[in-house]
Amino acid sequence: MNGGSELIFEQSVPGRCGVTFPPCETERPLEQLIPAGMLRRQPPHLPEVVEFDVVRHYTRLSQRNFSVDTHFYPLGSCTMKYNPKLNERIAAWSRFALLHPTQPASQTQGLLRMLYELEQLLCGITGMAAFTLQPAAGAQGELTGLKIIRAHHRAKRQNRPVILIPDSAHGTNPASAALSGFRVVEIRSGPDGMIDLGELKRHLSNEVAALMLTNPNTLGLFERNIAAITRLCHEYGALVYLDGANMNALLSIVKPADMGVDLLQLNLHKTFSTPHGGGGPGAGPVGVTAALADFLPVPRVRKTGERFRWDARGRRSIGRVHAFYGNVGVLVRAYVYIRTLGREGLERTSRAAIINANYLKAKFSTLVPIPFDDHCLHEFVASLKPLKASGVTAWDVAKRLLDYGYYAPTVYFPLVVEEGVMVEPTETESKATLDAFADAMARIVDEAREHPEWLKLAPQRLAIHRVDEVKAAREPNLRWRPDAKSAVANEASSLQTG
Amino acid sequence: MQTPQELRYTKTHEWAKVTPHEIAVGITAHAQEELRDVVYVELPPVGKVLKQGEPAAVVESVKAAFDIYAPVSGTVTRANADVTKSPQLVNTDCYGAGWFFAVQPSQPAEVEGLLTAEAYAKLIAAAAH
Image (cartoon, rainbow over all chains, first blue to last red; front, side, top):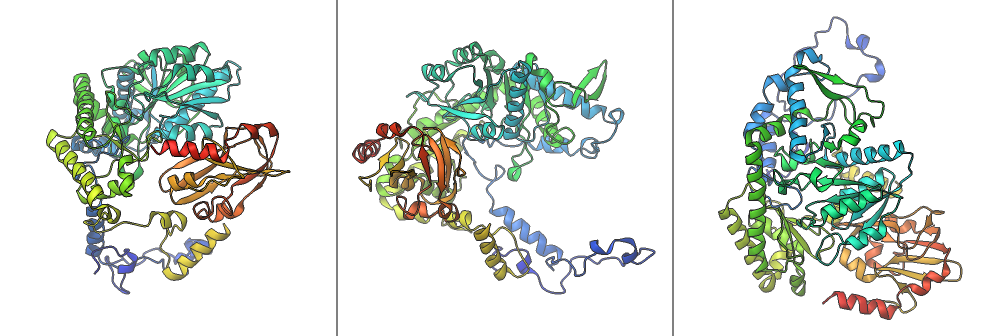
């Protein structure tokens, strides 16, 4: 026993078995029922363990994780708010959970109504005219939005190959635009961390399809000139796409449509409390103005009288972007969250998120510089550049925070801040938690000066210490194979030749 | 910090080595130090036409991913396959075995606008304060 860092395969003992398999009861031998090429000649390499080996193994692994259920999780840009258990309870109702996606609409009226109403609620929150709930993540929402942008310009018989993206945008924005075949042109922020109108104007032309911006931006700052920015873009016939990942700062306070935004995606797993769950499933619904509604993916949910139905027509639609209608279980959770809080509850959510971030920023500003020290919204970015003098990096501080029982903030993003640490406390946390977190940060800043080696070796108090991230990236060993030693060698050689 | 005299530099931390037939491109010692351990390099294919100041290659470290900009306009004549196979060359020998690609310049005069070693050294010294 090594405390559980063995793989489940390595715990295998020949002959050990967790279940008793029933005898094969087919009328004819299997060889006559299944084509020879599809029959195994040898049993699969499964770990031979008993049930409690499996339970203990995975329970131990789960206990090593940081999660919003166990720890404060100030991971900037990710909005790691608490996911209320009511969402889970209702999503698990058999009336939602046991529906099949190909069941006829006559049998799924309740679900269709929920989807329809969620679209309406998101329209109300953003001021947009129509939504699709299909995209499965923020970045897929971006891709959907970019396809709509392209379809819009094509319908006007215009060739606009350029997308403008400020350097304070989310990292996925340039990637999505490049993947969609657009040429990305970066707009440099002004000294205040905001879009510089002169710089924007210099890049606008009839080649520009859209400006993709994040507001509040990744420095947690609200683009004060947003009305002028969108007006300027529209003068050049360019659309404005809002990355709505930071919507947690704006609920019931500002509607993106009022800023002049033409289309946006929302991240339900950020703002609307659905789980981030190990990288998925997420949901990135896309909302558009009335002028763009015809380009939305099909099918759409329509309401006629009191009945709801699927509508797969849409001559101008960009087509389907997800099987069926997206990650419906996630959509149920977001619906429950919005209906539970209501308009006022959503506003209090955003206001509390903003107050928490500003409170923590004020505490941090006594310890380290805050390069763009304006009133922030839901998050802020501090610079740990002064610690470099003792050889300590943002990376080391992030690792040390784990020792203190906190998930680490986002580091080295956005790139406009040197040794940046991006903190987003969300509305979930109490003042006591924020105070304790700031105290831990103060102790770590002291340690960085007096005992930098403590930070270099961190984390020390966790089961797994500093992992070799460079080796993991350069020589990834991602798969267990029956003969692990030769497998590692094979993996390495296939990487060399591949 | 090493800044070889014979090279020209950009504000975005690329170096350019000018020879009669082509210009070789890489990233500076300062850039690789800021990036720390490089784990991935993506180079432009031979024959690709580059425009000065536009993204030409991608370099990724455990810290982040960055675009590498073309210091001059031109057509890619060679790409360093060794550096895509062993990205650590960027850290161990950024001015030598860790070079990225070479171009045949289409606007040779652009070289005149690049920074000298002295100017680049001043630039990074200023950024450190």
